[in-house]
Amino acid sequence: MVREEYLDEVLGILRASSVATAYSLLGESRAKHLLSGVKPLSPEMKVVGPAITIQYISYEDALKENFRGNAVYDAYDLVGGGEVIVAASLNRSDVGVFGDCITFGFKCRGAAGIVTDGGIRDSPYIMKLNFPVFARGTTPEHIGGAIVPYKVNVEVECAGVRIRPGDIVMGDADGVIAIPVERAREIAHKAEEVELKEDAIRRMIASGIPLRDAYPPKPDLLEKFLKRKR
Image 1 (cartoon, rainbow, N blue to C red):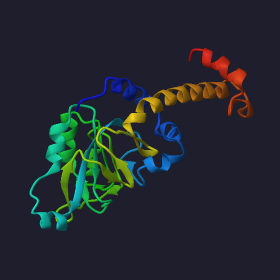
Image 2: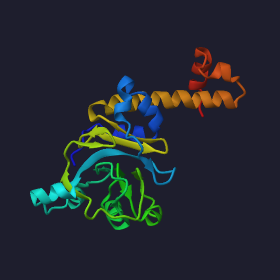
Image 3: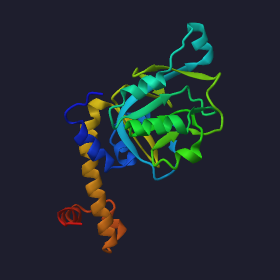
């Protein structure tokens, strides 16, 4: 995928931030950017990257169209390095959208991680891959006869959130958000400021400053600690 010139810098900043920080900066509409119920397979997993989307349809709809393709392979071919595979699978957490072999394939291809509003199967193997995977749950069931990977890199709705190809997907133990790509630089730089401020607050507390003075911080104390090196 072609990256905007500034995107690598933005992604680097967001990797040093948290979902909670970036989410709070999305404003009053922030709930529209939170993928409801999607969590990492293990708490230490974190992912940040531009979305490659996969749209799933029901098996019945695929039969009506006589559809014979597989958008998972198309998504694999599009990975250039660092993208997040977003599988919009009709919220079917009862079926395993990906198993260990496909997940391993995306890791080897250079994807940054996988996000789906469906289920994941073979999770014991996947958690050994050191590869971020976020889903609504785990299951031993496969997708056969339930849903079909239909189109790649189209606008999708995943866990209630509209995600376009190239939008920035960010996930950690708190959940997953999608940041519109046109707001990514703004959110990243604001997040960097917030993280610096909160680091200063933690150092204030650790130094013995009472919580009532440190959080929220008194301006003179904050300025003093922001100037100090860690």
